[in-house]
Amino acid sequence: MDFKKNTLASKLGLALAMLGTVITAPIIYADDGDERRNDRGALFIMTNSATSLRGNEVTMYDRAENGDLSLVGSFPTGRLTEDGPQIGSGPSATVSVFNLATNGVLPLVSAQADSLGSSDSLVLSKNNKCLFAVNAGANSITSFRVRKNGLRIADVVDSRGVFPNSLALRKKTLYVLNNGNQGNIAGFSVGEKCGLSPLTNDDSDIVDLTGISESFPIPAPGETITTPSHISFSPDGKRLALAVKGLDGAAFDEDGSLLALPDGLMAVFDVNRGDNLLGSPTITRFSFAGGTGGPFSFQFADDETVIVTHANSTSIGAYTLNDDNSLSLNEGGLIPVDSFATCWLDMKKGEDGNDTYVYASSFGVPSRVKEIIGQGAGIPATDGLISGFRINDDGSLDDLNTEVSYPDPSALLDVDATGNHGIDVRVIGDYLYFLQPRVGMIGRLTIDREDGSLSNLTNIAGQAPGLEPFATLNPGIDNFLERCYNGEPAEECALGSIQGIAGF
Image 1 (tube, rainbow, N blue to C red):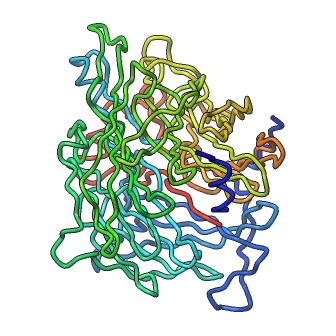
Image 2 (cartoon, rainbow, N blue to C red):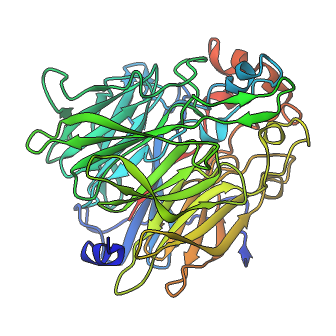
Image 3 (tube, rainbow, N blue to C red):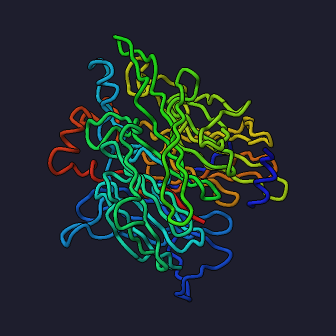
C-alpha cells in the first residue's frame, strides 16, 4: 500500500488567555446569504446541558484565518415539548464498573468530564452548510443550517434509540450511534435544506448491537467507559466502522489493584450501494494484554488505513482494513503513549508532498486507575497532554516526540480542582483545537507545516466549567447518583460540560 500516494490523490511556549472571556464581540456579516467569506471559517461546540431552562445548545464561533475565534452566539437545539427544550446528557452517570468489578473495594466515581464517552457527537457536512448534533438526554438529533451570522434549526428528529452519542455523515446519508441499552445504529436521509428522514420506511436500516456492544448497564443507559463510542464512514463510503470500548477482560485483585481493563472491539459493516443499508458486521477483537485494549476513537487515513486510539492500554495503533473487513495491525504500527487514557484523535493530512500527522489527547500524568479515582497514591493533578505522530508510507507510525502539556484545573480556575482531560480533538488548517470540559475552555495549538510539531498553546474561556469529580474536593460526589439522577438534578449536575467539536 502506498499511503502517501493515496493521501495525495484524495487531497511549550504557553500563552494562557485571560480567565474571564477572551472571545471578542460577534461578527455580523452584511450579506445574509449562506456563503461564508473565503478568508473565514467557523467553529462549533456543544454544551450538552440537561437544564430545564436552556437545554442543549451549540455555540458558534467565527474563525479567522490566523485561528482566532470570535463568539457568534449560542443556539438551542430545539424544543422537547411545548414546555421544555431538547436536552443533552448532563454529566455522565457515576461510573460503577470499578465498584462492581472489585466487589465494592473501589468506590463509585464520576466520569463527567466526558459525559458522552464518544467522538463525533457534532458533525458538519462537507459543504459546511448543514450541522448535526446529538441530544443524548432527549434521544434526538438536531440539524442546523449554517448561516453567516448563526445557526437556524432545520429539523429535530427522534434518534430511534437511546442515548445517541456519535454521528457518521457521507453525502446525503447520516447514521447515528445510539449506545444505550446495548444500542443500535440507525440511518437517516439528509434533505436539500438539511432536514432528516428515516433511511427506510420499515426500520430495515436499524442495526441492533446486542451481542456486539457488551457494557455495564448500571446506571442506565450504560457505562460511558464501556459503551460504543464512535462510528465513521471510510473515505470511499463503502464501509462503516464502529468502536466499542468493551466489557470483556476487566479484572481487579481483591484489594482493588488493577489486573486488566476491557479488551474491546471494532465492527466494520459493508455499506450497500444504492440503498446505503448496512451489511453484516465483521468483528475484530483487541487485547488489553497485547497493548490494544479499549478502542475509543479512530480516523481513516485512507480507504485501507485506520488509526485507532486504545484508551484502556494507552496506545495508538495503525491498522490495515482488509478485504474481508477485518483489521490487521501494521508492522511498526503500535506506539505506547506515556500517559493515561489516550482517547481522541484527529489528523492533518499531507498535501504537496508533506507528511500526514496524527494528534491524540490523554491524561498527562502516567497513572493507574486507583490514582485517577483518588485512591492509592492520592489525587493526581491530571494535567492534560496532546501527543503527535507521523504516518509513514508503509502504514507504520513514528512518534514525533512533540507533546504539549496543558495546565491542570487548579492553575486555570485558581481553585483546588482535578481532571483537565482535553477531548474531541479537531484539526482545521494549521491549527489544532480541543475541548477542556473541566475548565470550560477551548485549547488551540499551532501545527508546524514542516515537521508537525505543536506550539503556541492558547486557552479560550467562556464556557461553564464541569463538575468536580473527586469526593475529597467535592464532598457531594459521595451522593452523586442521589443529586444528579434521582428526581430534579442539582444545578451543577444539569449543566453538563462541553462536548463535541466541528468546524472549517
